[in-house]
Length: 128
Image 1 (tube, rainbow, N blue to C red):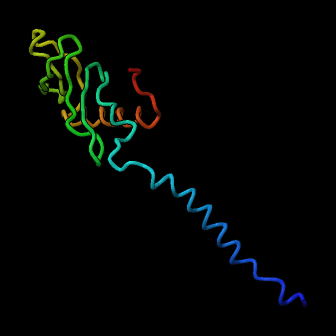
Image 2 (cartoon, rainbow, N blue to C red; image 1 turned 90 degrees about the vertical axis):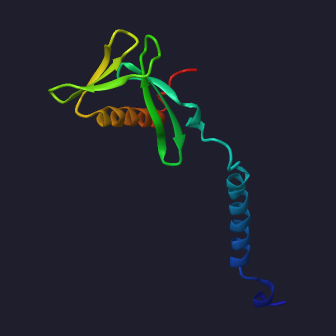
Image 3 (cartoon, helix red, strand yellow; image 1 turned 90 degrees about the horizontal axis):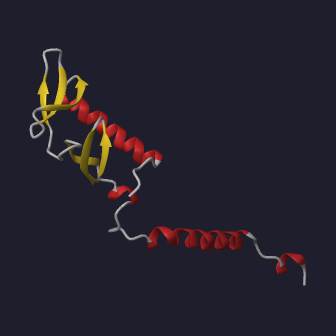
């Protein structure tokens, strides 16, 4: 028997090996439950900017973000000052200013959202 008839090309064997390895590696992707919540979905409350904050998650990120008094859990009301600061006030605690933020209320909510996402990314989440 000569060498040209006994040797077969190696590339089909290499292709099969890579295909099998790729299939087994890909099984992890297929075994994931698409209805399972992401690991951060339980992270829906924290203390930020001197207030309690609660929110939900959707595909776009943080949603339904609201701030509450750390003393009595009343939802805070925003009042703007002449100097364009936003004061977040608890009406239940004799109009106590819980926290203030320079600029419109939207900036306080944006700052809270950025902090939530930072804590989630860096895994600096509160211990349950």
